[in-house]
Amino acid sequence: MMDCKKALTEAAGDMEKAVVILRKKGAATAQKKATRVTSEGSVASYIHAGGKIGVLVEVNCESDFVARTEDFKELVHDIAMHITASDPKYVRKEDVTPSDFAREKEIFLDQAIRSGKPANIAEKMVAGKMEKFYEEVCLLEQPFIKDQTITIAQLIAAKIGKLGENIAVRRFARFKVGDVGETVAVTKPADPKPEGE
Amino acid sequence: MMDCKKALTEAAGDMEKAVVILRKKGAATAQKKATRVTSEGSVASYIHAGGKIGVLVEVNCESDFVARTEDFKELVHDIAMHITASDPKYVRKEDVTPSDFAREKEIFLDQAIRSGKPANIAEKMVAGKMEKFYEEVCLLEQPFIKDQTITIAQLIAAKIGKLGENIAVRRFARFKVGDVGETVAVTKPADPKPEGE
Image (cartoon, rainbow over all chains, first blue to last red; front, side, top):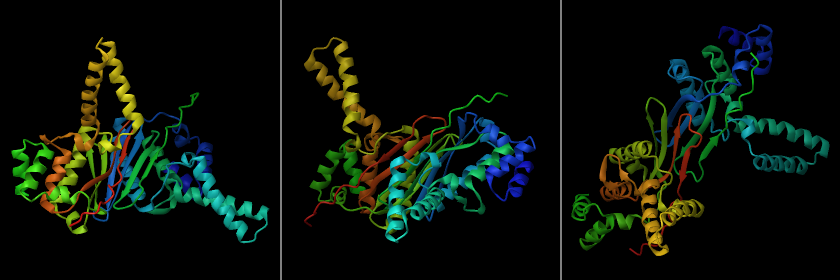
């Protein structure tokens, strides 16, 4: 765990850099664990504003033993609270459907072109905005509400390092009283790859 | 409220009969209220089996005042607990999609015909089974887990009578750790009809 924290600090919160650092140190636990199957875990909820907003979230790990630890429960609680406050629409970038992506991109491109930018500049602007889009709508890309220097993905990576098991957000639902729509986000667990170890 | 309870008892739990009785008594509150818009209410959750099953439910009423009453909170809690235990797939009969209905019907019809029944008898058997199907999969049709003599619809009708506002289950989600699928049921509020009163 200390390795992971140190590496994240060293990498100024950039998880990919941190993984490189950890690998060099021969302790890339999170990276290795990330391919392992998660079928245990916990369902938790968070109710906000006197019952006006509610979130249900399932977070998976590899064993019921880990699911019952205070560390895991704390993570699940934090994620439920985060979703309540930050209103993500998807779990991962990969869950954004091509049509959702295309719709957003078209809006941004239209805005950029209307503002009179040449096509090549407009394209670059849109690319930047689409990165921002992921950060705004994907749970794992969002800055953690209780510590904006890390993303939810990094929060989870730290727990993976600490608990020694792969951990993944499986699905969540967010209802707000009176809202026409509701958010229901489901992600498929990544196919386990052969680890060769 | 006492009127509603008495009427339900008199009608042996049959809501339609109870409404007839109440109407005769000039107190068919539930019937009248059922067309009114519900945009207030509460989101509540129920977590079962040490975090292995969780439910999030939104129940609407007409005013925040009613949403904050103990009676309303009790209803929402009871419904969340009921969904956790009884695993409904839809809110109302009307929410069963034609394709779901057709698939179930085909299975039942196939079973009836294989058992060697003539077509007219098979049709009747299927009609009966489809009634049972609604009772099994639609929240409002299910017998209430804490009092099997009434359905959830009747439980709600009693509260409508007591609180004097229309009440409707808007949506729910039910996650079970490790399950491939999840239940997300959303119902549209009925269009308010002119009441002429």
